[in-house]
Structures are given as C-alpha cells and as structure tokens.
Image (tube, rainbow, N blue to C red):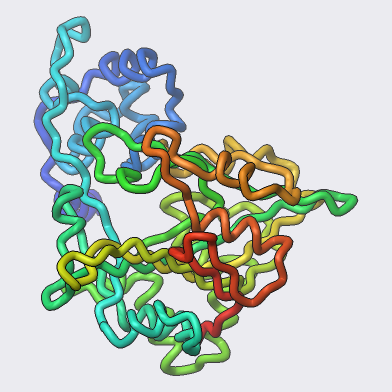
Amino acid sequence: MGEARRNRKSSWGCLLPAAIPAENVRQLLKEKSLGQEHLTDLKGNLIPRSTVQKLVSGRQKTISKVSLERFAAALDVTADYLLRENPSAPREPNPKRSPPDRKNRIATESLSRRLLARNAATPSFAECVKGSLLTIAKDSNEKDNPLRGWTYNHFFQAAATIYVVHEGGKREVVVYQRTPRAGIVQYEHTRGVAMLWGASFSYSQPGIAPQAMDKWIDDVDYDPVSASQEFTCTRGSVLTKLLQYKVDLTDVPVARIMPFAVLTRDERTSQGGILQGRVYTAYAFELLIERKTWKTEVEPTWSKRASVYPYCWPVEKLEQNTLETRFCDVERDTLSLMDILAWRAIFDNDRVICDKSRKATLKRGFELV
C-alpha cells in the first residue's frame, strides 16, 4: 500500500529535495495581509487548501515542481526566493510571463452577418457555440489579429445579469469593477463598472479533456430539451459552471435562470472600404437570487478571482446622462454601451433597443438550442 502511494505521488510531479521553509510562506502572507484561505484563489492559481495548511504549519517539507511554480506565481516571487534559507533576504521580482487572454470568436462569416443584422432572426445560443473558436492571445496586439480570411474580430461569450431580490420586493443588481492589472492582458480595451458578467469558455480544444461546454453541446445533439434545462437549472447549471472562474455561485441559492437578451456592439470602422476592428456579442441570461433564503454578505462570498470585487446597486430608473456617468471609462472617455443597454432593458419593454450612436443593439430573448 505504501509503495503504491509513493508511486502515485511521483506521477503527480517530481518532488524537489529542497523544502520550502514555513517561515517564508508565513512572512509573505503577513506582508500581503492575507490569510491562508486567500492563497488558494490568489491571482487565479489553484493550490489545494490542504497543501497550503501543511506548508504554513511546517508539516509538509517537500513540494512538487508544479505546486512550487503556482506558489511563486501567487505570491509574486521567484521559486528560488521561496526556497531560500534566509527569510530576510531581499526579494527578487518574479520574471513570469503574463497569463494569456482567452477569447471566443465567431468563426463563420455568415453567422457573424446574421448576428450583426438588426432584422434577421437571432441564431440560437448553441449554434453560436458550435460556430465559435477559442483563441488565446499572449498580448493585446495578438488579440487584435483577425482570424485568417477575416478583416475584423467578432468576439462572442455567454454572460449573465445577476439580481438580488429582498423581502418586500426590493431589487439590486450585482456589478463589478473592470480594472486592468500590470502584466496581464485583461480589461485593456473596456474598463469601468460592468453589470454583464461575461464568461469565456473552452470548446472543442484538441488535446484537452472535454469541458462543461463540450459536454453540454453533446447533450444538445442528443436531447435538446434536457440540455436546455441543464443550462438554466437553479443548482449546478452549466451557466454557473462557466462563470465560476470569475464569480462562484456554488453556495448561493439561485431562484431562476432564463435567457434575457443578445447584445452586440459594433466597433468596426471603414479603412479604404474595408471594415476593420472589433465586434462583441454577448448572449446574456438573467440570474435571480432571493435574499430571504441567503444570509451571507455579497463581497466575501462571490469574489472568486482576485481582480473581481462585486457589489450591489439598487434597481432604479436612471436618465441617460446618469447611465453614461456610471458605465464609462473615465480615463479613456468611452462608454460601456452594452451595460447601458442592459440597464435600460430593465425598464424598457421594447424588443430591440439601440444606443443613440447605433453602435450597440440589444435584442430581447433568444433560443438556447
């Protein structure tokens, strides 16, 4: 039994002969004012909680190469610094590369044209997933490179608007701040407060085990009715699994999930008669939480990623100029048009809503499969 356990452990990664001194980990956590529970989620790294506890207490003396690299990345130091014998030695900056940005793009031009046409029938969400491609950009320049044969990028994602309903009927919208971080290809183009919780996803990736979306598309082809229920059920839905890397709704009592609207923003400009630039399309779902069955505060429960800090705004009808003040990037003097339309749709019952520049459109309702 002991030999089998040793063989199994060695298959997880080569154990380094050098140990991480517990004092090094404790000192770094103290410097960053973090508890052990924060280290597992810091900067999106997935480090087992038991490993953190054993290292901090000194009960574990060795660590796999993979875990060592994750600890170093999470604490923003080099691996050598973690392994040093003198905790007071000066810290070296971490030379790690910036994590890539994952984006889903519409890969069929005919599908892109249908999404951009205001009067065309809206494709189903499943059709868009099947017609999409996951791309990974190392930097913002690579992110702007169109697919081969295209002159523009058409980004696509699932999204959610999250509402909290209190006893007595008072409603709040859960929003978050999009703030770029140095060295990370994220929120470089669109910044400021957002009410649309977007989720990129893995689909049909060679060499990667099937993910939530792969399994769901298989279910769509086999049993569309059950697949629809699976995507929007109130416990363990496919939607909440897609959102989990950004907002963890595992323990939150979701009362309802339903298709809300398709939002598209066309940022293309004509260059010599050729349309170039970006198009964004979000298939947004409305996710409702009843506060009377949920007593935990929002902020500490939902912050799955270190860069996302949710908070609530009361649902109230706002004038256009107020919306433009709330949903904007002050530094760049740009508006978050899709978020503005999503807020307007709370009170405007029109099936199609456009912004005044006609660059963004909201089409209410869509078919899942």
